Length: 327
Image 1 (cartoon, rainbow, N blue to C red):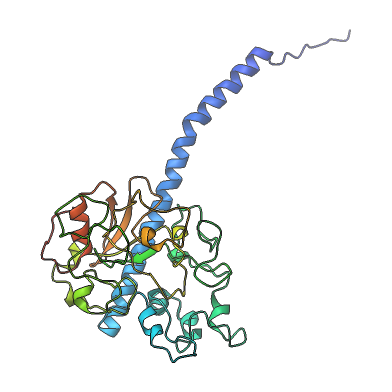
Image 2 (image 1 turned 120 degrees about the horizontal axis):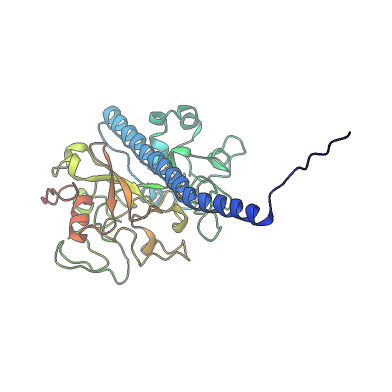
């Protein structure tokens, strides 16, 4: 006699219950997975700053000085009718110290960074088109690797995608030609801007540059020029490159970032990367603040709610206000 065995499957209600349980588990686990991924990205961002800080120390050990952040002032001295010369930025100068010596050796520092007069592949222009600088990319930023500013425009006058620079040298609470800046003595107010007295980002003199670097000039400091102490002074920090038209590799202008503007300031003009006046402060996509590298090479996450005068002072190398401020 043939026997028949009945195979019983899931009922619709049982299936729905299983699906609901899976959905609940996914909802519970997804934030944890996202947090783990963000923690890994934050760790990579911090490590990038650490490596750049070490590169600057090695540069200083070799040259007994820091590189200037921007060479726009040298380009102003170019012969009339000729292409600006020596128009380069700090990232290029430290390439040999971040395992990029072959690229460094191919750069012609005697011509403009954007020189297209020399046929490719022997011009500087061809070296950086669609190149990727992973050591200058914050992995948390969704624009990492695009080589474009916020409005999908190219950096500076390139016209094509080039590496964006997510980390900027600190020029301290430096005065700029920004209309509406609240230029007052440090600690005397809580406005959106605060500048050190007699500072000027167009002036190469040491007294006009309160930070370890200049903002857009050829000021080149030395570690001994930091009497406040390397462990008390910002050397590098994060800046959202997509907000800055002048934030690409080989860009000769506005490389420095100022603590004269609040960290993650509400005044950042996200819609216009050409508005360098309001986009030249430090900023990041990390919730609540940004990573900074101090002069001694240590990297620390700084809250965007840090006391504003304290933040300004920590950006300055010689204001005499040695803070126990950010520890």
